[in-house]
Image 1: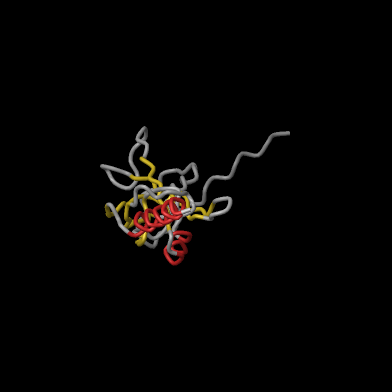
Image 2: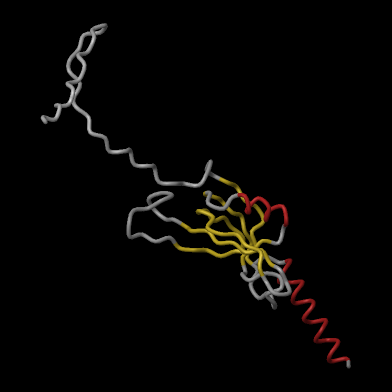
Length: 156
């Protein structure tokens, strides 16, 4: 009986230690790809950002981003992240290795602060409609332009 109590107390102490003591902390930036609440019994809030290195937010063709998964335990941070999907964000996180169960998180990285660093999701610019234009003639200001020629009439 004492051995069972020691094991339960040890597991509780280990869980408390891994959740309160941070092994590391830092910042990551990228585009927030997804943010979900999932789990069968223990609902956790998990997200994923695409990290871009080098040439800026969006790199050229053939360059794929590195994806970084994270967890969120704070409801206010989760609400901010839910609104920021598709935006470029900067996340402050702490790393907690050795958490004994997935009831607390599916990753070892806990985000505790988010900063949105752009105005909105990036979408490709619409291509201008292809129209056929004729060069404008050189005209003095105030002059009237001649009307375009009418199409030829069909002969009977």
